[in-house]
Length: 96
Ligand code: HEC
Image (cartoon, rainbow, N blue to C red; front, top):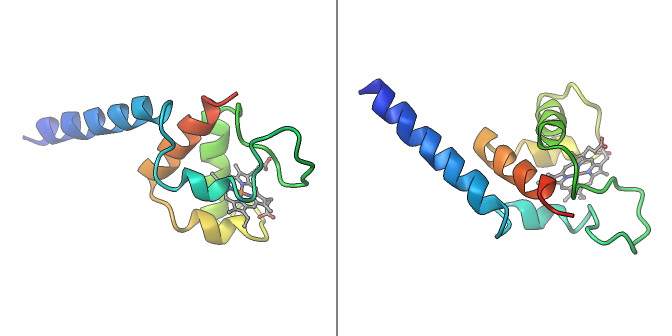
């Protein structure tokens, strides 16, 4: 029974990661107000598109735990679950 549940969770996460490449996952649109997606915008906020998924996930986890100092990202990161962070990071990593 436990393995069935684990398999089901795995499927959901995989589906979320696959879907992530097309439509922005929940929450991702909130990031782009500060993190510009266009390279024509001059901004001191680091760009996210094309970054490694693990690097984005690690940064958000460190913001959430307080390990990485932040002005706003610590508060923002606290609003997301692990699954949401994975999906958002996968989506940005897949953007050019
Ligand atoms: C209110 C503006 C704002 C929003 C919204 C925002 N960010 Fe940030 N982000 C920042 C700022 C400013 C920094 C630099 C760290 C700090 O001062 O908090 C940053 C840093 C980061 C970093 C680290 C980049 C690096 O090179 O160290 C990542 C990853 C990141 N944000 C991801 C996200 C994601 C994913 C979202 C959406 C869920 C998001 N941010 C939403 C302003 C924002």
